[in-house]
Amino acid sequence: MNGVELFLLGRALMKIGEDALPEPPGGAAKYAGSARMVLIVASDIAEHPTSAVGEIAARTGLPQSQVSTAIARLKEAGSVITTTDPTDRRRALVSQAPDASDRLAQVRATSIEPALAAALGTDDHARVAELARTLQELARDLQTSGE
Image (cartoon, rainbow, N blue to C red):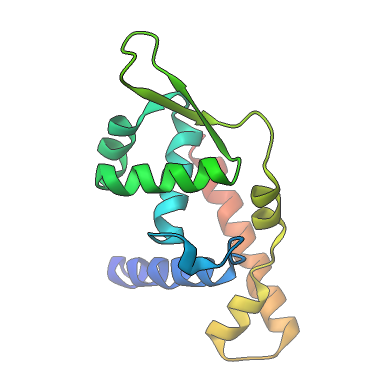
């Protein structure tokens, strides 16, 4: 595998991940922006608690309007909270909510196997389960190698 193949694999995995996410309450059409954008913003907030919208936009490379939209979705789901910046009362600071929201619990509990099976075009449950375990092992190894 070369770098281009790895990059394309990453894009394919992102698409499978998006397809695996349960639809938000009220349906996907209710919300502007993509699940990908919301996940990018949520990940940044987890890594950088108590950040301003502009800081999140700068780190993620997303336009500030998309970051604000994602934060609104995350706030509605109960995944983040906002507070007024004590040093600049015009700014809002965003942090993870102290408790996992129902939506976050639902997302975390959803299996990737149906989306993986659809992407592979197979109903071979054993093969899909094997690949899901391999992906989980790779994710674990990549996460622990960066610590």
